[in-house]
Image (tube, rainbow, N blue to C red; front, side):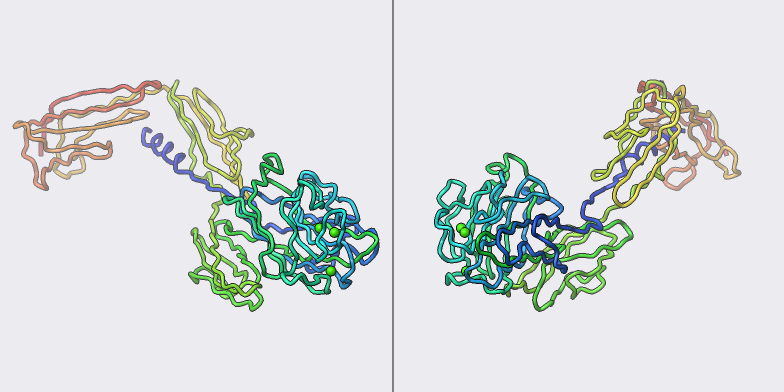
Length: 473
Ligand SMILES: [Ca+2]
Ligand SMILES: [Ca+2]
Ligand SMILES: [Ca+2]
């Protein structure tokens, strides 16, 4: 009985049901509003080449400013050098249906709180615009370079101040280093803006989860405005796979499509951008490739393994009256329901009846019903005063008969008549077979001392007993 109890509590503490998830089987989508519409292949037309258009596209999931991000996308500003008004990359907290104001505000006007990176191709002299197509960072829906919402000075989009309304796709990269609070913008592979700012606290008043996307508008002049985004634009550095299943990994796009993942373990093909991983153990990969700007990079990708909840080791529980047991099942990214209610743990104290447990996470769920009973507890050990270690199968070993519900500690020592210790046990399963140093001990009288701590109705009680023993072969 006592061994069942001890095993029971150790099994519970070993139940580490590590759970994670959020990205498993996740497919990412965008919301297009106003004049914006999907062109397929991840491209959205924000405005047509018509006057007074207004569009926005928002990613379905929020960005977390507590984490780094690295976004890469193509912008196309149309074919008319004298067109208007441009495109703004926006972070905001108004939702994924939000739409701003048309005209020189480039669809960004009207969002507050917000952060915007304008790619402005129309010179509004009242806003202090550069005459060339330019990039600047703003907050709170303003595009006025003279206002205190201007977070940076404008710089020309191209270093040579050239025209970006050339019908070509322009590669834009926006990165955020959460620990350095560093926000940077690249245009056609050249860094054009950089700002160090606690965006979460100074703009969003402590909110770290923000919507992100793009706005565009036309006014009395116009252009086609298109943004092309990958559906996996939020590149991850950690993937989670359910134990025994597979997951598609992914890294940044490359023009020459030349990737090498190391170590080449558990991967369908270590030269793909997106190999299938079937690891059953946590593993870290390094991926070598050349990015779209020709930089040779090495990305680090971690794969975590998530176990499906398994409550199969749980057994019915018997507790002594007034004995407490705190049941705890780790499930960090899932939930554990105790009798239908979500709690961290469940304390048993004089509880009798069925205890229903359900543990679930995104890899699966398991449930079990335990019968919990309260028993009268004693802890007594009885020792015989004679034994006959002659291997006839009868009384060949010396040790206790136990009636103990919950033994905490145990020691038995046996001495010969000269006071030499001939045997010692610290576990109830160890009995004396009458030998010492592999030699048979002689017939005669021996002495034993036994000490144990057991639970008697919730109280720990220590007992010390001694006696003599006849060894007869
Ligand atoms: Ca232009
Ligand atoms: Ca402008
Ligand atoms: Ca401007």
